[in-house]
Image (cartoon, rainbow, N blue to C red; front, top):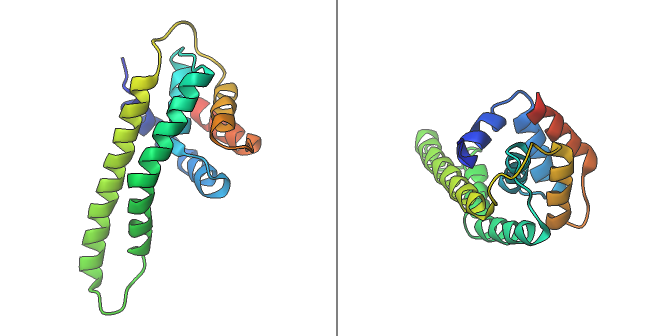
Amino acid sequence: MTTLWNWAVAAYAKPGAREACLNLQDGHDQNVPYLLWAAWAAETGRKLDAETLEAGVDTARAWDGAAVRPLRVIRTTLKKPIPDLDDAAREAVREQVKAAELQAERRLLEGLEALAPAPEGPARPLLQALAEAARAFAPVVPRAALDTLAATLSA
């Protein structure tokens, strides 16, 4: 069985996936690991009911607020030159923060995977699963952006 982490790494590497995920994150305030969890669940025949989606939202928001987002802010800040800070040293620290951010996302995915039920049937349509997850996460469902992600992941 493929773990959610391994599935997510492969999914994110697909052409266009990174851009689709960043659009959902930055343009629609969605949580990418949470959405990838919903896509993985659908693809592996797992049905995420309303209670499981709610638990996933709680987990994603907790990890995002405590670890992922603060690390992302630091990493983004360190992207640009900073006066009186050596560029090589800044970039070395940025890479360390980037690695920590990735580890935080991995731990989030592991926590989400633990919430998922066992597979119980065939794969489900990705767009439907993504829309259900997005609806549980935020009041507005960015259907066009989710459709782009679903098409990218299905390719």
